[in-house]
Length: 193
Image (tube, rainbow, N blue to C red; front, side):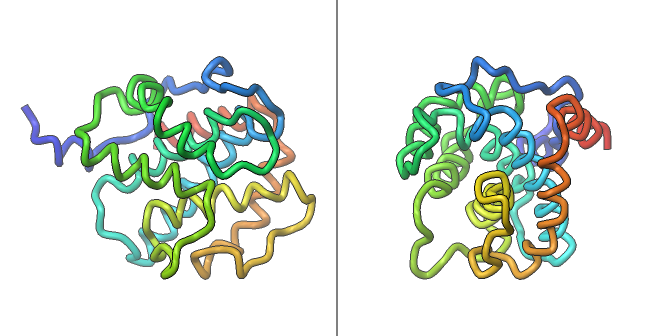
């Protein structure tokens, strides 16, 4: 039997991972499956960059970030401005992350880290802000990059929590042009690597 810490360090996306549209409380083209796939892809890219720059120390950050990116908008009840959907997701969507993405039930302290980031993604940043490389900062930046779909113009780079996030705006635009099948292929490719 491997210690839990060793298992979490080696976690990767499951090779058969797919997002089921029934997981969404409010099926939507704005905050639905394609948005979630794009946020997961962008989160993966930002994670790799943060790792390259030595901005984190948690061995579970990648796993936690993918779980948070998956369920961050699943509990939305509408597409309008809402600061509560993160709270709703953290309170109701844990089983989806654990069953379909992680493959095991997380210990409470580890779930709390993910849950707090999910709740924070739909609220203004605290003072002082989340530190670069932290789970909430990476999730908020990945979600923020996909705002190109809403405004059809780049977000203000001052909005991002990492100095490098704006470098991924071209990728955000490219992902916006892809269909659902291609986005799923990218996730599957990430699971294989």
